[in-house]
Structures are given as structure tokens and as C-alpha cells.
Length: 404
Image 1: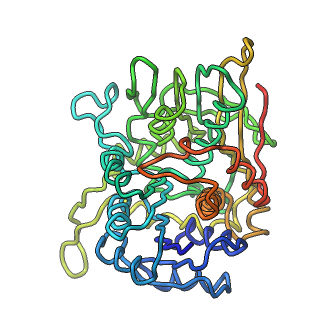
Image 2: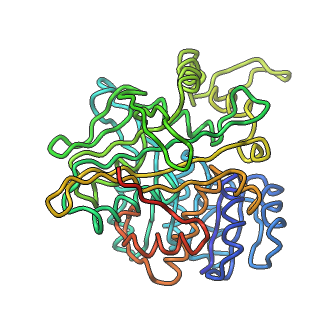
């Protein structure tokens, strides 16, 4: 397998360090707009299967040419969601398969944003599913940790743990702290703003997909491995758009443990218009400059990839499922916990980016060995879960199951 990885930030760098320990690929080209960043990621692994290149993720022609020049048969997108569609189209143009960890962006309903869906996450990609299927090519979308491993858990629950599923709820929580910072998100603030301030989507059988207000339906969820109770709220996320396509459940939700202070900060950013992506004109030393307010916020905060040495605690991603097995009610939580101290010592990567990066590498290996195969635009739920979970454990990062 020959892979083009686009994006050498925190997640992309973690991908290289995880993949370097596995034998399933012949070449992994690390490409980034900042060549120095790509070169640093390659130098750190010290493996001649890796090469660094410069590319603009928004330039479809350049990305397709890079895929062709290196004979890559798959593109792994480790950029933020703004670049999903250019990279998705570049892979199709070059005849390569495609993987991402976040799907094409949504747009709220123009009149009823907190009741009806507008353009949903992934709609632009699924609109082209027929083209991918006719070509016999695969676009595996949403294969990070959430979405990704959480979707694999949903498939596993449907296949092996339940006869009927009442509800699938993704529940994400952590007890991470960052020394020396009052506010320092452990993941891309650009992406966090996008998913937290957009109208959350809920799925119900018979009603389909609908939206609610941001941060709605708060609940306290008790996370395992010493993390403990965390208040979780509805957040827009890909699992709600993916799971119902392949798994039969009456209701699907996603709730994120943000914390009251984080929620209030996001509300303030929204109130001030600092969550907007459309450029505004501001004075500059050489005259007026057009800048995106959200990009300014992101540039003002520390790079999450650099926070590992200051971070303490654990992060947990998981899927809570309620239903019936053998005529009896059952409720479980399938989960994956990463301790930041361990991920820093073992890989030199902070826990959140490492946990995200692990899953596309596992998926690439399954595709390389033929354990997973398919064509079209498919989510992780479209594939058997057991091979993924077994390989995850082989990678030295086991998952857990708690009866509720």
C-alpha cells in the first residue's frame, strides 16, 4: 500500500508515529502546506518508507498530481473539515481510495435552524457515492475516534450484543487539564467551534434527522477508568448522520462533555461574532487586511499538538447502547480510554490527537490486508467490527465494555 497523508499537524504527526511501527505499507508521503512541518514529522520517525512533500490541500489538481507522482493508491485526510471536499475530489480524480476523520461541512436550515436540518454533515460526499461505487473505489468517511471507533462500537453492539436497539448514544468525556493555561482546547479550536455551535442533529426512527439548540439536553454521564461524572450536552457530530444508515436503532445522539466554562467561552465567541469563517476587513501595517475571525481565534490559542507535556489526565471516547438481548433489557457502554502520560511516554503525542490518529491507521491496515473491502462512500458501520477491535488490541490500545 502506498499512502498520501495530507496534513502534518498534531493528528497527522501522530499517524506517522503509529504507522511507523507497522509493516503493512510500502510508502507514506507526508504532505503539508508547511513543508518544514512535513519534514519534521518524517524526520522524527527515521523510516525510509516516509517522504515529505509540500501541497496546498485546497488545490485539487496539485493533490491529484502528487498522488499520481508517487503512485499512491489511498489518500488519508488529516486536515480540518474545510478541505474535505477538495481532497475527496482529488482522490477520485487520481483514482485513489480516500479516508477522512471528519466529513463535509453542514449548513443550518435558513428558517428553522433548531428544528430542521439544512445541509447535513457528509451530504456533499454521499451525493457522489454512485460515482465512487461505479468506479469500484472506496471513500471511507469518518474513521477517526469520534466519528470512527465510536461507529465501529455501534456495529459491534448491533452484531454481537443486542437483538433490538432502542438507542445509541455517543458519549465523550475527559478529565484533562493543561498546566499554565486558563483556556487551551486539546483539539483544533476551528473544528470544535464548528461542531459545538452548529445546531446538533438527533435521529429518531419515523422522524428521521432533526436539529435542536446547541448544548441541549444536558445529562451527567459517569465515565470509566477514574474520569468520573461529566456533564454532557448535544453537539453536532458525524455519528448521528452515519450510524442510522447501517445500524437499526430507534434513536441516535451524540453528547460531548464540554464543561460549563468551555460552553460559556464558546457562547461568548458566538456573541462577539468570533466564530465566523467569512473574512472581515481589519487595519494592517500595509493597509486593510481580510481575515477570518475564527482563524484569528485559532491563531491566538496554543497549538493542541504542543500541549502534551502540560496535559494531565485521560480522555474517553465511547458508545452507550440500550436495547434488548434474549428478551431481557440490556444497557452497555463500549469505550476506549487513553492516558496522556502513557501516550506522551510511548509516542510523544498528547492523548486526544493520538487517540484520533490511531483509528485510520488501523483501518488502512485492514484495507491493505483485505480484512475490510468495499466501494462507494461508506462509514465504519458498513464493515465488520470484530477485525477492527481485534487489531486495535494488537496495536497495544485495548477497548472496554461496561454493563450499565
